[in-house]
Image (cartoon, rainbow, N blue to C red):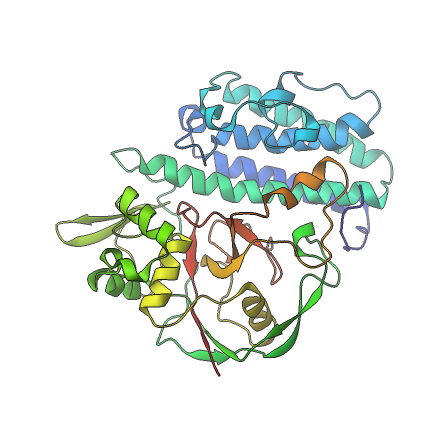
Length: 403
């Protein structure tokens, strides 16, 4: 398996079992406010039904852990191997991603039974005997994978409910972390030779490795994210009507999709409202702007006479200069394409399809969002999406050359 996982072995089996139970329970708690009808719908090809997220994360543990490593384990339903595989070619054929919302059966209740079946088998296995470090690493990968789907569950639900003309709230009591306020300050980023990539104890995805050196020219980076107030100024100044601010593909997308503001913003009688997990609300002026594409972030940076930081600048500054709340407010677009680090080697086996085969046509994001599970990210974490995507909690931090 050869997973690049440097976390020390858990001190007891109970520790790993408790973490497994906590992560799995969190997924169910996130799904709890949703009806069976909510959980079946797929609002666009990029999104997946909540029912599918619950089943796919369970499929991961059944396919990569229980079936190959637990003697006598019987899969819950052989058809699920086809229905709930995502993109693992080595794991066999799969149902087409854009048609996941057509799978009205099995019902949500049967997915709950599937989760119970797999969780019981995992609990028995974890209690039975010590596990090799390689298996513990694979379990941790499965838990990290499920946490990624917890975030996707929320972002996909937000997009789904935004299609409803009643704009129903996922959770009327949803609250987001308080973001730094005040004038934007410029921090001198560490220049010269920088060490980039994961190091030390703790989990890391293969795309965060190997640690390597990068040379950084002098630069400055903003101490906070761009706000809704600043984005409103961009709108008022014709940012969405000025082609010279945009990359060619971005301007084409802006025109084709009639972008006039971030996704989920609506202008009602001259006032902006934004759809959130708590329902329709006025965008808080000092809060970080979110749900903007890389194309929009790049256009805003150009309008500001600045630029997006490279991912190396972002990581180096986060580790040495420090940001005020650099995680938890929005994923931050960088100016870097998602490409392998020097010497990158994907994990062996089917899980090697996790990151490496997506290293084309995507841009890197750093940080984390209100939908990101606490403790899931780190300074070296590399999120990635295509430059036109807006349904994630994506924002931006500015940078500029210092020389």
